[in-house]
Length: 227
Length: 123
Image 1 (tube, rainbow over the protein chains, first blue to last red):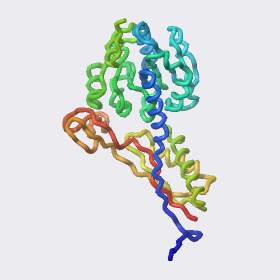
Image 2 (cartoon, rainbow over the protein chains, first blue to last red):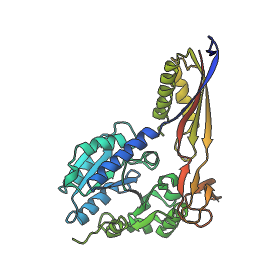
Image 3 (cartoon, rainbow over the protein chains, first blue to last red):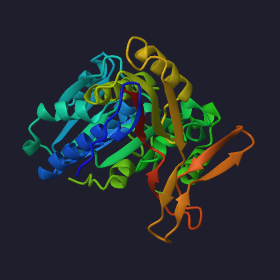
Image 4 (cartoon, each protein chain N blue to C red):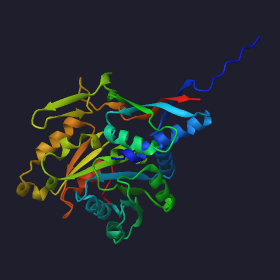
C-alpha cells in the first residue's frame, strides 16, 4: 500500500536551491575561452583604475607587437568612444563595448564583442576593462591573462588598498614611473606589496607615454616583440 | 558595488522557484556570500528589502552566511584558510593569495561565491 503525503495550506517547506549566481557568467567566460582557443587567439584583460594608463599601455603594446601579431582591441567604457578612437587610429580593429551604467565588463558583453570580429584573422585581443579596481575582479571574461595597471600618481598605497583585484592577476604594470620621484612614491615598495599579496603576479615598470618598459610587459605575457 | 544587480538576480531566482512550488509566501531566503567578493552586506539587505516590496517575499528574512576564503597549494599540499597580514598602519588586514607555508600562489576554491542555498516557503 502506498501512502501519499502532501502539504496543507499554511505549512512551511524548505527548498534546497543551491543556485550559484556567478555560474552564469563563469560558464559564458569558459565558452569565450574555448572559442578563442579554437581559433588560436590569445585574449588579455587589462584592468586598472581611471587614468592609470590602460589605453596608453594597449597603444604601446600594439605599436610593439603589430608587426608580428594580428591584433584587435575591445574597449569597455560607460559611454564615450574617445579611447576606442585612439586605439583604432593605430589601424587595428576595435570594438567599443558600452556598458551604460555597469562598472565592469562581463562575459556576455565580451561574447557579443567576439561576434563582431573575425577570429580566424586574429592572434591577439586586448580587452580593456572599465576603469575600476573593484568590480572587474568578480567577473571572469574568458581571457588568458589578466593585467592590472596601477600608476604612481594614484599614491603609495594603491596595491594594499585593493588586494582583491590581484587574486587572478598574472601581471601588475606599475605605470608612470617617470613621475615616481615628484610623487614621492617608491616603486620598489609597490612591487613588494604586489608580491606579498600574490606571488603569481609578475611585475613590470613602465612609462607608457614613451614606451619605456613595455617590452617587459610583452615578454611577461609570453609575447615575442622581435619581428 | 554591484549589490543591486546581484540582489535582483537573487530575488528573481527565488520568485521563480516559489512560483514553481505554488508558494503563497516566502518566509526566508538563505544565501552564501564569499568574503572575497565585493558585495557589501548592508547594501544587499537594503536592495533585498526594496526589490521584494511588492512581491510574496515581502518582509521575508534574508539570512546571509559569509564564506571565508580558502585555497590549496599545488607545491606543498597546503589546504586551508588564506593568511592575512595585519598592518597597524592601515587598520585593515590584507589578504594574501600566497601559501602560508611555502609562499607559492594558492588556487582559491572558496570565498568568491554568491549562492542561494535554501528558501523557506509557505503553501
